[in-house]
Length: 423
Image (cartoon, rainbow, N blue to C red; front, side):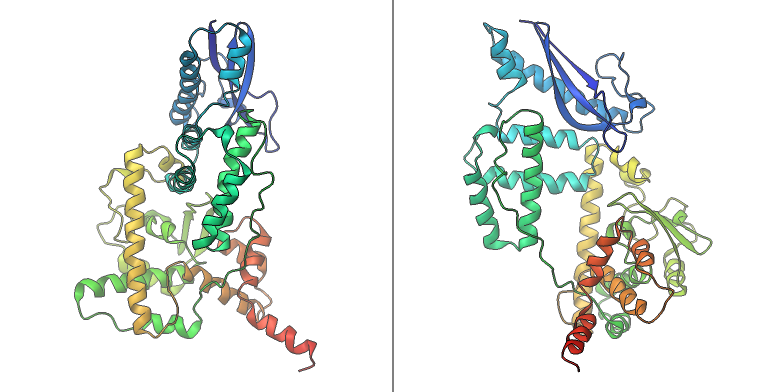
């Protein structure tokens, strides 16, 4: 029986006013719509488009989204053709439109392909690792419909043997999202996660530096070997710059361009969330900027000497631009960021050892140290508010900031404890 495949828009938007794209499969004049994970604004959808051109060129990622949609259509067509002669439309509907026989590994690959059109390479790499480990744990070639609650609880127990509760929680939540989508798309009838208990979030002891330790880091003696001394000086400068300006994440700091600094302010887009931040530079921050801003630097050059200005990824400046990079460029960009972070963290640990700073020091502790400094000063100065700290940290929700600060408030707990017993 002939079958046709097309992409169409949901008749109703979600709460944010964005529309979901559906795969419409028609078999013998009967059709079924299967939900994808791709959402767009209605104005970008072309209902009269030729095959593969459903998303208008005015959309900044039209090519990557259209490519992902073509992949979805072709995968459905391949499943249909693999059936061979079918005696009734019921068989086609069951096997093609509701393909419970799909392998878990193949289903995850489809999910990742859809996500790659709208998510960053870092995110896709992380999710791929989580899903691959789950597939590798299960019997080889297991079907999506054959995964049971027993399987998941077995995997949960294995994760708990070597991981902290928050890591176990993250892994299970990411896997559960794919099974929830499978239920929504009617690929499976029941979600095996329905009876799985996801571990509650655990409050962690976030490493932070106090004022004296920040000073010790800045004045630590550098290596006598120039090769290591150069990296240690860079690591200190980047750490201190981050600490002074709201705890800038390392990926954001490494991607700062000369043009991001103007009129005593730093304006940049956070790579994790896409939120734009504008921060007034501290005097010490201006000194660091001037130290690394070369006279011959172009406005689009990276400020700090880690990422390569001549690399193919360098021409992709905005977060949206980077999402449109070819896969090989995304991979190179990701690897360069990761290797740079490794160099910085190794240098920080050498310096911390010389400065007698206890614990495992990483660059991200600059963010924790800023948050703790802000929390302590908020108790002393009325013009510092938790909402102001939220904006500096780049959190979208106030309760995220509150949880962040509560983790550091040992003094507040001690004061309350003393007050309870009248001390």
